[in-house]
Image: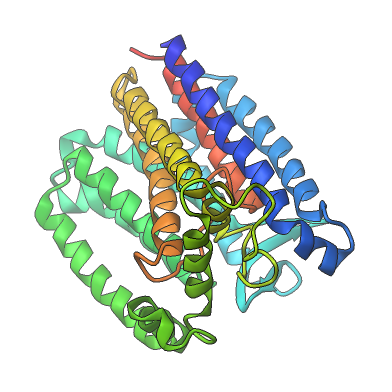
Length: 361
């Protein structure tokens, strides 16, 4: 199992290294224009990376089974942090969304902490209630209540992408744990209807869906971002235009260093570079599921499975959005995109996966 831990570390290190290079490449001009410092985003990324390393080492330093007792308190803390976002003076608004809490010069998204705490809580419930897993009231309802509270608070920010990814992760975990298919259907059907209703309630979401079907219908308006993303991907060809030679990052493609960093990777490193990144994620997911399969107990199995599933969903949704396969979503590419709390969450997840792998059965 030591070999698997080494492989997981190498894959994670490779993804983070790619992120460091591409964040500087895609943000240096924008950072110099806005802040007078071409390394502004890179410096902050390094700071969050140090926090992520500390978090990963902390989660590796004890037997993960002790987290079972902390799953409920951590979930409660996460809910309180999600609520604190709406308190004036604590919550910070950016781009019309109130998703951040500020602590001095740093800010973080409570929704990322909620991901981790909800995975821990789900792993605890699904492993502890295996004998009642087919019972809706005692086996499944507590998990749905916790999910409902978290997603409602995240939707209020608003952050539909994270809410959808979080819900999908819990549904997948419940399915794997053996929850009754009828009970899953009872939850999924209203959830899908609510999802459609939430899209129809916000004009900008409707514009995103329209832009997804035909972005060239309004290339300077609702379709601008996806059009510029597709131009970047198409311009890269097989081998790319060369590192740091992207044209789309020159104030054409918005959010080039965050949500759309994969487009810049495709432009500068080409099809080979894009496939390389996808291959790293595929290997990461494979190793993560292998760790989950070999965990010594059900709690470790569900915990590892949930952590890997969440990272996999984020990667799939991000790459699908920037390539025009689904409507655009505000989800960063794990380990690679600029986004402090997301990086810390992913590195903490890796720390937990290494911990579970160390205590294999």
